[in-house]
Structure formats: C-alpha cells, structure tokens
View 1 (spheres, one colour):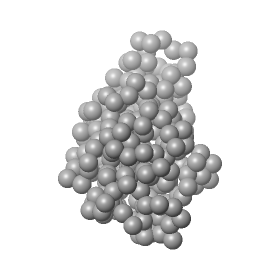
View 2: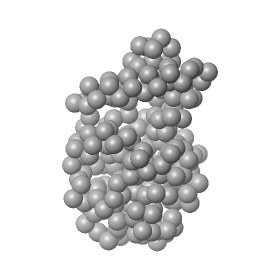
View 3: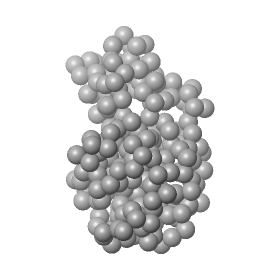
Length: 224
C-alpha cells in the first residue's frame, strides 16, 4: 500500500520514460561526434542521456571549441529528426497517462526537450487531451540535473513540491527531483539500473511504465 499522501500532480519525463527514444538519441549523438571528428564512446553518450543538452555537450566535448560544439548540436538535431520514425510510445505509456489524467491529479509532461523534438514526441505519444501542461527547453536556461525544469513543472501544475510525484528514467531526473524536493519514481526503460536510480534518490523503481501501471494501486501514484 502507498505510504504517503496521494499526489495532486504527476510530472512525467518523456524521453526514455514514456517514449522509447534514448537509443535514437545515442545514435544521433554518436554519428554527430564522428562527423565532427571527435571520438566519443557510445557508452559515454548513453551515460549522459537525460542531461541538459548544453551540459551533455560540455561534458562530452570538454576542451573543444564552441563552434565544434554548436556543429555537434546541429548534427544531432538533423540525425535525430531523420530517425524519428524509430520513435515509439512504450507499452502502457498512453494508458498510464490516461489513467492519471482521468483522476484528480494534474498531468504535466516535464521535459527539457527542444520544441522541435517535443513536437515529435507528443505526436508519437498522442495523449495531449489528458495533459494539463507541458514544459520544454524554452522554459529554462539549463535543465537537468539542475532542478529548474521541475520547478517550472510545479508552477504550471499549481502545486507545491510535496504534492507532486515525478516519473523518470535517469539519474539526472532523480537528482533534479531531490534538489526540488519532489518524490521521484524511476523506470528502467532508459537503460539505467535500479541500484543507480535508487542511489540517486528514487523512492521506487519499476521496469517500465507498463510495470508501474500494473502496480499503480500500491505505488506513490495510488488513489489519483
């Protein structure tokens, strides 16, 4: 049974949580790095997915010129767009958002994705009628692991941190939530282990959103 007050808002990350997109990002970044002539191992790219884009580039291209970093960003955008046909909603994602949206809790898609990527993700997810608010990279200067995007999501939901639960897939999500004082529920569908998610601050971890949906009544999202 849930051990705390039901949330008045559920904040959902999208990439790697509701939409199977992390590995599309990895491939796009890896291809971009090859094209600019800088070798970055794919596992390092994977470890950075979910981090704010500018922080990701600064971390993986440390010491490189701003022009080269900008070119990498442009190429990632290009290759991600070209691969958008590979994007798919995870099993249970739509049903989970609809279930939450049909209850008393406000649903917010809390992402720092750029507007063009967000448009593709929302089209794939197809749950806009159940969503009360959406964030994007336009809402903050720098996003996860900084808590800014979580704070914006709370403001848009009109709730305090204690009245929200965030569902995400990376340690960057977890760290942002810890700093914002929001309860974090992790899913492993982004490729991060349960141990790492818990160490970063997850109160509970599920295999994916389908697993969370199956066990919704005993989760932190219960009674919504």
